[in-house]
Length: 101
Image (tube, rainbow, N blue to C red; front, top):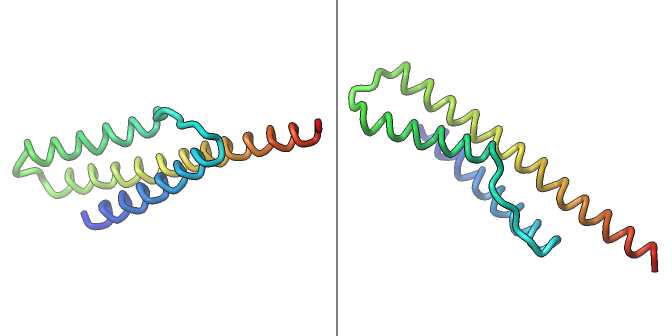
C-alpha cells in the first residue's frame, strides 16, 4: 500500500510541474484526458471496494492495488508524452514565427 502512495505522490508532483511548464510555455491549460480518467476511476473503485468489503481477501486486494499502480504509471507516462508534444509544438510555432521576421 505504501508503494501505491509513493507512486501517486511522485505522479502528482510530475504532473504538477509539467502542468506549470505547459501553462508557462503556452499560456493555456488543457482538459483531462481519457487515461487520467481511467486511472482515477480505478483508484476510486479500489477505495470503494476496500471500504465496502471489510474482509476483502489479500489476493483480491493486492490485485486491485497492482492495477492502480499500473494505471497511475501509465497515466503519468501518457500525460508526459502529451505535455512534451504540446511544449514542442509550441516551440516549433515560435520558431516558425521568428523565421518569418
